[in-house]
Image (tube, rainbow over all chains, first blue to last red; front, side, top):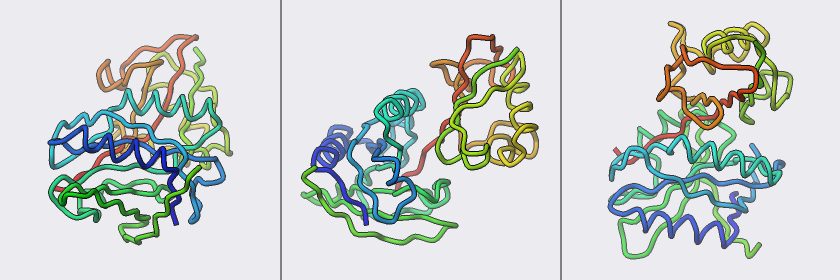
Length: 140
Length: 93
């Protein structure tokens, strides 16, 4: 289960909408005991640039990754996952997502903007196998 | 020449749990070479079999991604900090 602080959720979905028509992406951080945990709590969202500037693929801008990592480290947080939007398809990992999901400890969050209301779903991806997990919004 | 190398959470398990280690070298290639001699388990995660940079990591000297500098030939000095972080990508295609 991935618990998402409301502030992180709002920042994530807002960033994905802002990035249209491109895919939006960013990182999610939480307390270090959330790293690799099945029951994780993402308390902070780091919106990043999409270096691919594409509606079909994303690459987290490397400089934004470095900045986010330094900020999280200084705050005693760990990077626990990544999010990106699918602008015209379901919130389900594509073959590209699975092939490029190298961190089994991470939570991979998809934001579909295909329909009027954004749809947020989360997955663990281990050895190419996709397992969906529940997403719960947390006030804190 | 000794530089500080900061490791991302997912690679610390291959370096005795350390978040930061010292490695020797005058270029990024030499630093990564020394790093993977000290911690052989890191090798497959940082360097490809043919000696290139692994596509799932980005290497930085201070604030700059070495892919936009001289890649493995990028020079480093004593006060430089080398960071290794995941390269994250994907998409609907």
